[in-house]
Image (cartoon, rainbow, N blue to C red; front, side):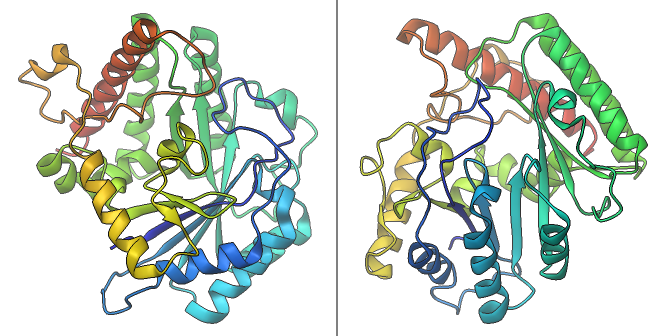
Length: 337
């Protein structure tokens, strides 16, 4: 049974990041589609799941503020405060009234920090007392060149200095990571993990691995495939957002959220079983006896539609990205022992 719903609120954005996989446009999800998706998340209430989670993403979600606030009110009024609501955003459109509303409604905000963020946010009041620094998650996207990696760590130290405590890091995928870039990236990850180990910060990837550790070890795949559904702007349902990015809106989907719930649920269970039969693994790392945190990746997990390359190059990049992520997970595992 799914306990995490990701809604693509829109495909609009006020920035043009070259690594972004979302196809930009000017569309916005209809409220009735979002309402249907939320209701589907709570379908079959006999399943006892401690927490359910609704994430609203874009594009840039805050370009659809009225829709977002309407969905938040629906969830709080109908399903209460135990539902986790999350919104990732570049914060460029966030104002004091928004912060007041999201704080009052118990919404978790995730601040997406991209390469060059200081130029983008140099006039932004990101140290405002209105921002709950113990609650807002700072999420870094890191490119594969040495300068970007060094900038990422400098930016991390900047936010840590100003007492933000929740951090997450995602390397850009779909590009080849040279070995020196991988080594430098992991060096900084280890420094961040040391702070997390001493409870000075919360590193979300570490928390996720702790929570999903047994599933990773026994099933050897991302547990989110079991727990998540993604609904795009038009209501098409996919196992996750990455799976949707490699398919046309009506191709490869599990169905539309307006289908009868029982049929849609059967489609979700079927396609997820099929997905789990195909995995991509780095043979080099598979033979490494010491690497017992050998997570397998599916072919669509590491293909980024933002980049165009031939099939040979694509396979080389995917295996390189597998190596990057497996080394990242192995590094994290050291702190789980």
